[in-house]
Length: 133
Image 1 (cartoon, one colour):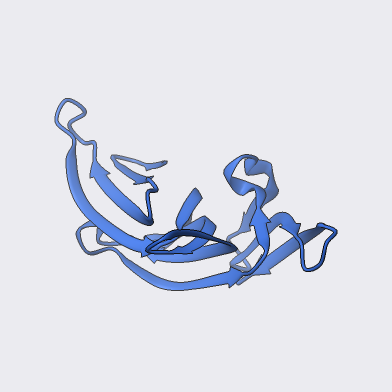
Image 2: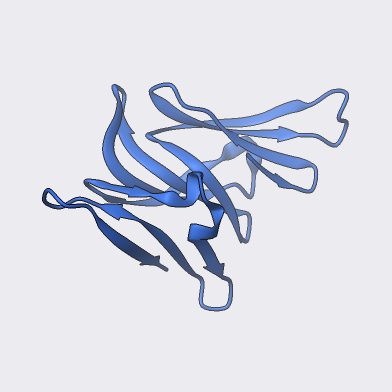
């Protein structure tokens, strides 16, 4: 969940990632503005400017998680017409941002995200640092 003023972005997960945008300008009467369904799910959301939201999580399909890491850039500038701009995936990888927000950092000047996680290309897991622009 991520709050930006009166707008809250919420992610839930069943088989796909519904990204909900809710208007809280009247807290007694929240209004659902938009819902976007994409495969996988984001367990960490971070605003990156210009109405965009970066989702860090797990890749998947209609059947559920596929064991890959996934980072998605959402256009949330119009919460009633949200869209996925692009996504990046890495098989056999997990990113820590969902349970440790200190493993994610965003530099707005260079527009770079640094995300720490684990990858298991073979038997032994390895620590990884992912840098995305």
